[in-house]
Length: 576
Image 1: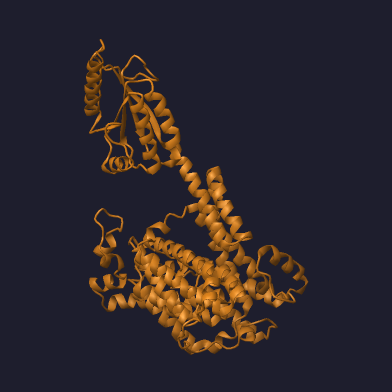
Image 2: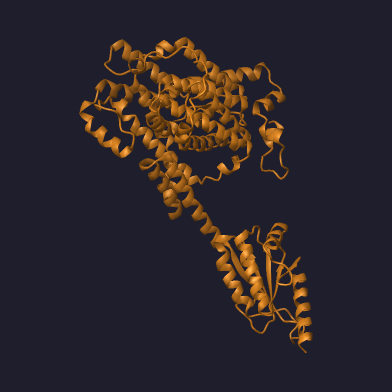
């Protein structure tokens, strides 16, 4: 394992810009790369290419574009993701999660609008990466991820029913699910039995191959078998050739998307959605690869690579690129050594397109629908969804809200609402975790009892000095409640020591509450001392006006007690 793979971006010593954005390919080559490593990467790359070939075409067709655009995306985008990325095993290409977004973008803005949105999303991903914002993408709550993934899976499944059954809708297929389902139900009498048989056989072959012969690429085997049988038997079903014509045998000449101010503003929401989903999907895939291989990816470098890949894919007329979990996992399981495997996967796909493009015209759409139905079934994390609905009411609310909004409204709304609910739930839990504990009540030097009274609960008016401890993050969610309690305590004592050694973080709301307490205490003649605060807490308090004479700072409780008794003794002498 290389040194770079062992070092996390979150270690105490901050990595340099060069360390953060050096592609993993450079790390692998520095370790030493020879014929043994090349053979391992070639085998893995070929294996992934065989899986990616039918999947890329199926995703493109389901997205409302031609199958060749899925291949362009996998070839161009996939090559750059591996060449420039921060993950050792990430494989990029078109992903099922984008089907809903791309189809909606094409329907609303046309092909040119979708390509422009892809280009813009690449620029956004570049900015996210180079501004080192990758860590914030990881703050998406797990229930939100599970919810929108399951929602996307349902939408993909529904989008494939027409081709799977060979239905004749008599018009364009509706996009929204609540409009699509009635249209599909009304078209059920038009089921084409051969199409249904091909689709069902495709799913059966994939499932049986995975169980009985996992080394055989089930998706490609099923699609090829369906194409051969449909051609030999002359089945009256729709194929890639009958709907889209022959697939080109070479990459198109790159061209910039059509730009205009109006068009840019129109597709901006789509570009934001592409960038957000691409960032989430790519980092999730990189984390999966880390878990399988024991390596560590560079999140910001990975996002920057995704940005370059999306820009390049759009120049060739492709659709959004992201890291794909299925292909990345296949890459790791196939024994890949490093990023060269992903680069070779793209070159193998290019070779397949050049040599076998005419054969792809015979692939039945029902077979590709069967592939995506299988993908959507596995895409939905059914066990995780069920577990979250049972774990707590809060998690159930988050995951179900995200799931239902993704299905019935749109993906962006589902993610944003789920994230908002998750944030509120987190704030509520954090606010409930902060505590204000009674410590000791001490006499002043002028009182008869000089011994410390320990374990006393509640308020003790006979004691001049009260010591309380705050434990937990003192932030806006808890500031008002805690400050109100502290004010009542301070009103009943001559000196009030607040032990803040258990406060790891204090925001402006907490500091403002403490400043209000200091002013109130000073007006009432109560000495307020804050003890044990870390450097960050003390700095924030001072910045918000918590300073002498309204409040005093002490290193620890003993020091605070000394300060309190000195002030009380001085005040006693002044009143005589």
